[in-house]
Image (cartoon, rainbow over all chains, first blue to last red; front, side, top):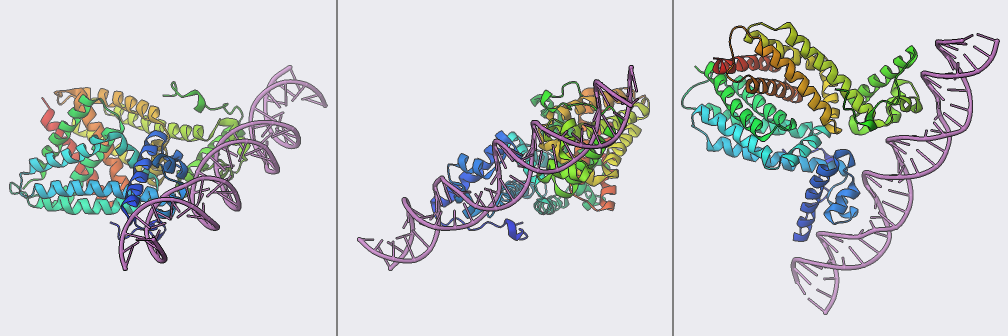
Amino acid sequence: MTASTPPALKPRKRPRQERARVTVDAIFEAAIQVLLSDGLPRLTTTRVAERAGVSVGTMYQYFPNKQALIYALSERYLEALAEKIEHTCRAHRGAPLARMVEALVDTYWRAKTERADVTRALYRSVVEMDNDSLVEAFAARVNIATTAMLASAPDAALENLESTNLTLVTVIFGTVRNAFERNLSPDKAEELRRQLVVMCNAYLDTVRI
Amino acid sequence: MTASTPPALKPRKRPRQERARVTVDAIFEAAIQVLLSDGLPRLTTTRVAERAGVSVGTMYQYFPNKQALIYALSERYLEALAEKIEHTCRAHRGAPLARMVEALVDTYWRAKTERADVTRALYRSVVEMDNDSLVEAFAARVNIATTAMLASAPDAALENLESTNLTLVTVIFGTVRNAFERNLSPDKAEELRRQLVVMCNAYLDTVRI
DNA sequence: CTAATATATGAAGGATGCCTCAGGTTTAGG
DNA sequence: CCTAAACCTGAGGCATCCTTCATATATTAG
């Protein structure tokens, strides 16, 4: 995931002392706050630094430019998300298909719900900057995890594992994201979550052997 | 849809002569081009004007500010999309459920495919600016159209029309968008499109009465 | 043909943003 | 305690960017 970080976006140096680690964390958190309250176009280096309680110069000691900051932010977010998904997939090896689906929806849903506004803000920045490589790496990582999980289902083999996996992942991720961008009322959202599980299971029944 | 346009974003004046209409169209087209080649952060008034072959001043005769231009662009895009969907929904009143689903997926899919890059560029700008009101109006409009279509299905009543409709629309739109942002190979995309239809129909079979 | 209206121009004002750099402060280790 | 390395500061240079306005041209109506 970090292997292919473009050189122009690589961190300038890593914090070696504790206070520096605190500083960098503060910068990240400040960036999220600014993203939330002001939006990506108003996310300026001065604003982030101010919010983080450090000087602009400090920021530039760790990030070569503004884009690198956004990049690192996206990386951080996707890394955490990927880990959650991988964990869920590992935890459900050998479980019935229906439970797998439910767990996957649950994990992704919860990841978005926990800090829905932050998620939305981050997602926008991921999409906006040319962070395609990050997204692709994330997708590949998730793909491996979910494929392994599905392949381990004891209750049914699948006609075409690859295709089914792609479909499930795309549908679940796309739907959840869409649901959150529409700001549904909590009960409608909950209903949708349930229906999504129903739908995935109905689908799996048709491609089961 | 235009009823609630914030005053700061309302067009400054409408073109009354033919040449002005040409100019405004050129500005829109130029904005899309710039969005495509340079991205939203690099979309500047001068760049758009230059690309459109007009002066900056001309732009400001029709749009009070840059944001209004983006807003109008999004509005235009969503308007066209909403019309396509409404047309499909009207054309499939009284059709079997399975055909409705297929038509809906087809319409949305085609709308994205026709000029996939443009769609992506526009979508980003829609999400970025605070065009939530536009998106909401669009969603409401689509909701009415699809609900009316589903209600007219002769082959089956639905347990809970509202819930089923919300689920279908969210899943279809979310999935299609997600599929396009992942830049899938054409054959994988086509396979996914088919599977999405299968999935929706499998779902409908479970909520049919 | 003339006046009124619509449309177009683009230089320049004012604002803001990104990033650097020369110099200060703090910490770690001997 | 002392020195080198790590860390931090923030004013200001340079580059844009957004927007206006005084001026000019084109169109239409009478």
